[in-house]
Image (tube, rainbow over all chains, first blue to last red; front, side):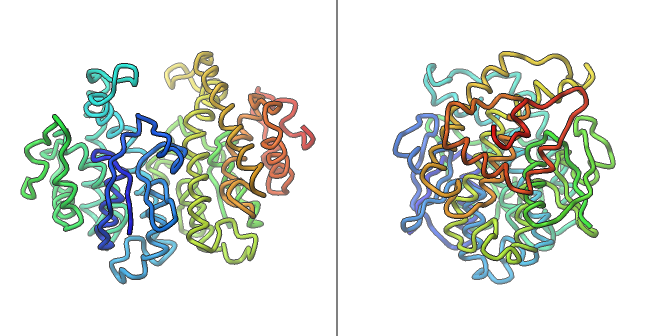
Length: 229
Length: 229
């Protein structure tokens, strides 16, 4: 039995939900509002961040730690669909792109948009809540455009972002993008190759539970759950 | 032959220099000022960050990618001194703490102190250079105190930060701390256990080249290279 502490619009949690879907694992999902800094949750992960995966007595905190753990304990079982290549040389590009999307894209786009447009709605004033800072939103919306071009550049030259097979890189990128798509802030018309790549990832069965995510008082954009966006 | 693009006070580069030292590899070091955004360097690592390791035709960008690559290609050769444990379960704690120091400590302490006190000295006004913002420096100096207590807490209960053996976790923490120690901003008197742990890491032969680092116009703090600080 696998339990996942997550938040619906935490892109790192979404990446792990996609991973678990690819491994055929249906986790028990527990929603965590990290800004509440719940002591029981901090005991599981002192860093106070989602996702945290629990399996048997093991606590596995952090998306990348979880991804490596799942690969090390179950990766070989996926055969040629393994999400981290067998070859250490091929892993370099997968991990480079994982880092690009989970860190760089997150810092330049998703963290800002999600904090301003979502998280602050659910926070009290004392917790830092309030209306979105539209200047921050504007910069993030501008930043996403070069990331989308980069996805299009990679997807136009390779079958998947890091090479011939779907890997952690695709799932990490799609997890980040999906949050922004929920908010309606992905300018899909600007890059056809990026759009085609995302349509392929979005069609995977592992993606379904993400497309059903709803937040109180916040409807997803019209294209969000549409596989023919 | 291994080449490493680095910067003397880039903590992520220092982590890789420590790793290479532990593996007995003496790299050719090339100093890179990432804020110059040199096109040839961006071609190696589009993210524009140090460190980048080159071995034969392979470009390995990013400290964590490099650490995993070195473990996968050479880890078994270290035998029981392997820096990432054989057991996937033991790896969870090592990677959790790697993440803690390389990301959380960096974001809350080192990035701010190094940017304000060092990087901005070497940047032009147009690049964002100038005098340090002392409010930022003050917050970072306050943040380091709880990180130091956390190191002391871990080191007081275990032989090394993540368990019985020295791992990536110790080298990542020491690499971050060493930059702050260069600047004289580690309040060592506040945690004896943390200080004893750092003295042990600092005494390793792999640490020597770090202690010899000098920057133009910026002398290290008096305790920096002292093994009996």
